[in-house]
Image 1 (cartoon, rainbow, N blue to C red):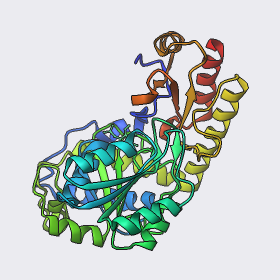
Image 2: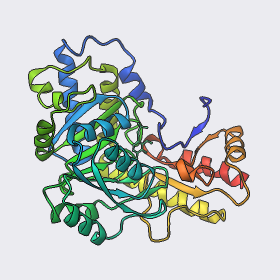
Image 3: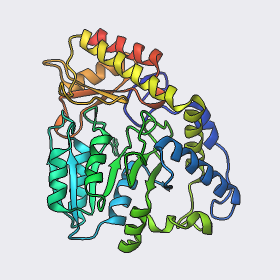
Length: 360
Ligand code: PLP
């Protein structure tokens, strides 16, 4: 992507200068230098505030998928029962990942254009299958939808023995997660979406119940969570910490908290509403079903009748705009506008939408 382009790709998003500066220096060894531990602890505190949790937040080198795999491998054994809410690419994907680890997975399956708007089917499946874990995705980035967390919390309340594991990769920092209020045991995140840091870090909040499960499973692979339980108090990380990545994440989280979360969330909501209004005025159709909850961080739009994604993308790029296409079964059917993090700004969004309007 040319430097002068307007970036409205829904991750990795454009990184603010302050964040780039925070990571562009020589650091010492995160294994040896107490300064790193102080930075890690400070970053954890900020992420706890953003996620709305008092639970430990472990920060690992890697992007979103790292945390997704680490969470599943650290908590699941072959034969474990899992119930997965599947409403999009990542929801179906997590179900497949759990099944790949040998779990016995039952799914609540909806079309990618829909969201889980009521808890009945999920609660019934949970009551029947008695899972060790319920998995779900808050914001399905490929379809621009948002599964309500209070609906997921209802299933957890009805069967507290299950861990509630939610991918909040594309929503955290763009809207409230309230992980403790919503009884989320594992909130899975990456640095490259609404946090607006480079795609280098994953961070996951882990409840006491989840830690108990992690200790029982005792997974010891490279992406294992268990070594992080005492990494801070023992100052012993399982591999060389990526100091630059933690510095970037800390700076990105600091920017959000300085702005204040209510203002950050309001900025995302304003951008979402404006984006939806403009695309509708252009005669385009939102991909999300009429009764689906739409995400404040990304809008998926059906490609105009008869237009190919390749041509549409080139037309946008030629005019200085970077946007994303569809994934999986939405490939060639939708385009996506990422108004998340540093990109949830009306000036860039207006300019990007003007370009789209000049094409359709
Ligand atoms: N979960 C969701 C909802 C995502 O949108 C993504 C990436 O787009 C991921 C997980 C995986 O994150 P990463 O691409 O940083 O590995």
